[in-house]
Image 1 (cartoon, helix red, strand yellow):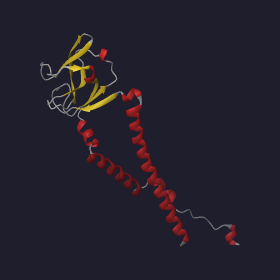
Image 2 (cartoon, one colour):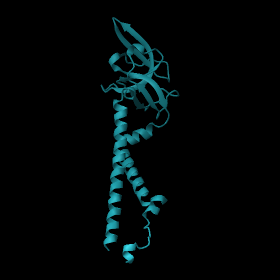
Image 3 (cartoon, one colour):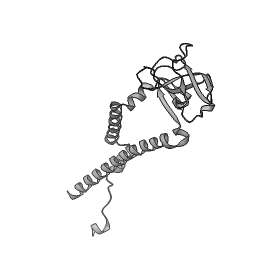
Image 4 (cartoon, helix red, strand yellow):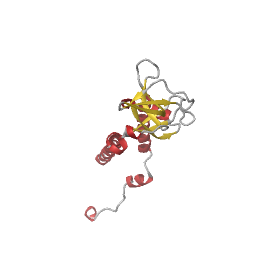
Length: 197
């Protein structure tokens, strides 16, 4: 009886230890990812945005993710390139990030201003931008994964991801590998000489 209890305790302790290791590993992966994407200079200067309107179609489509270099010098901006900037598109005083072409750069008395335009027509946007409103320059587009990213960043999405991680762990624990099963089998040995005497 004592042997059986000891085996159960060891199995329970091993299971608890494995669960702690798994949770710690997941937390460590997310922490490292957060630190890398927010504090490593080369990577942290890039930001991403999900495109919500069709103003840049077919170059950039609704649901695409754009990667923006926020570390670009304003003097390096060129007419014709795609940029991200803050603009009050609804006229309610609330500025949002917009991704359009940089159409014109105007310098007057040492002050730079910018005019932008969409892809869908040649009309200039109604706003005139200044340096502080420029977010950065377009680097790359990742197609059609925006909705997945938005879902993952939502409260429900985070709950689903955590639930998925827990379910994967439970399934992995419920069906251990064959190697583990073999190791768990008791080893039968012949009685020792001391027991025979």
